[in-house]
Image (tube, rainbow over all chains, first blue to last red; front, side, top):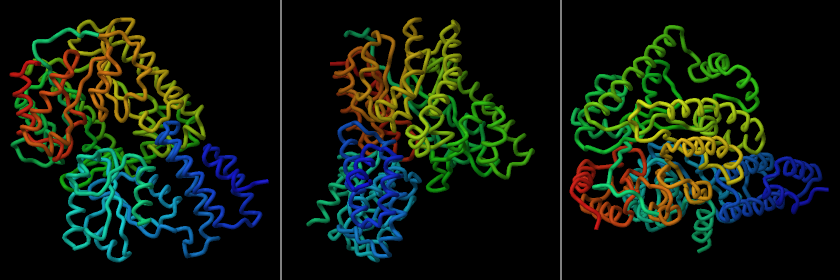
Length: 211
Length: 364
């Protein structure tokens, strides 16, 4: 008999067959969709922890993210149009202008959503003015910028400057992530935080959202 | 472990499309990359300017021709800010096609992969692409001749290889596809890598037996796909071929240059028993100081980050280069952490400042 603990552990162990079986059984038994989401989130948290410990690596995060996305897709209809799991509210995530990479961004998105954020994903090659417009439209206070190329640092800097020029800088916390970012780049770009791991991104965003 | 001292620290360049940006000819990347005569003029100008001791990835990997002919290629060509080229995930081999691929690779490439990359290709375009490939090979021979006989700089390596896993990641399945396959179909990934290994070993054996080459290394190898693998996956999909390459080079006492993207030291156990003098590790992002401490048996190349070269001042670059030279000591080649590709990867004044230092400074 499937239970939430089994579902959580199956995701944490990246056991796709067991995860799908447990998930289907929960759906068939009419289990509470929100509780199912919570179990998936807990499993994803464990995946993140094992990544931090070095047992899992990037490919495992991608795999887990895929399993989670498929499950969330199936659950959305059950949850209805309102996302009850977004306890931390909305935030913006995108790959910055001139960078077309999104795999890292999508991993982070899965983990942020699993942690309780409603993620407004602006996609790839996102110009600064589009980000500024989205901040105003969705009234968010957290922005996560992703990039893989060294070129992305220039776009991240331009984005931070555009947010400041729009008079929004003091209302928004900005975290940057991806291959080229580090502590020095964070200072140059003008962001508030930087991260190489999805887990750190989630922890920082949760800390900001809790204030 | 003591490495043989040299009269000065050597410097390596990893120069990609940035050479077009640096050129005083002021042409666009698209123009240069679709005109081999123009590209050769740029290379003559730029390579003569800096006088590096060696070049990594010297021959040109150029998909612009195919993009021009077919309207697409394995890489994405963006026209902003100036025809930036980026590798994006592109799936040419579906998850259930491994067996078909291995049954007849040539037929599969022409009948399945080619149509996926260029769905509207005509016979005329294919003929043009073949001519472009031949012109590329001709260009690369001219490039290598220029480097060796006009600049007097040996080629970096007599053979170059990626791994089967890297082939899957870059050209066939993409990052996401390979990540899923390693969990869902590990035996298929293993079979692909084992098949690709034959080509790698054949090339390396020929390079080792080539007594007429003046290249620095027998093997130039880039570790890229391990950036998504946990250690067990690395052990299963990457290490078998890499170990065979290393064993061959050690047996014949031929040196290797391995460029490693992502983390190096989480894999240090695989390199720590290689005899001194046979391996130069070139890390993309990990600290060369840490690698020197943890792997004293390997020579190290790198240290000059594109962030510093692109955003720092000449004095900052020179000060850091001095620190590298002084602290890394012998068995160290000053090099770029990443290939110079984008406008912010380096400033001419910074590269010149560091090169001037290389020729005048002696380790303190």
